[in-house]
Image (cartoon, rainbow, N blue to C red; front, side, top):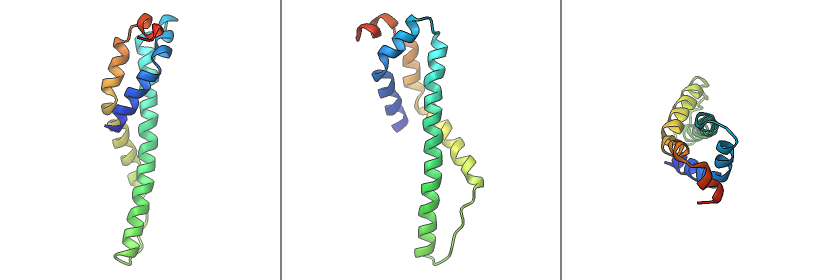
Length: 111
């Protein structure tokens, strides 16, 4: 849901930019690819941050509660990033589809 709200705000804030891109001849698919790339970057960095933060919390809990040292298994980093990328794409599907419906003339006027 946070990805959807972030992407919705991005589409709303950059409406004039989207309208300008479309008015200059960019295809709907081209604009969609730009926003899809932003969503994937958001998902990737979220996955990396989540993996690192989760590993740090797990190490802290293992050390303080169970008095056992825990290592960070890097094999799960790819899984964390893959899940995060999928969630970012699914969460941003609605705002990305609104890019298709955006009329360049109305968005340039600020409507």
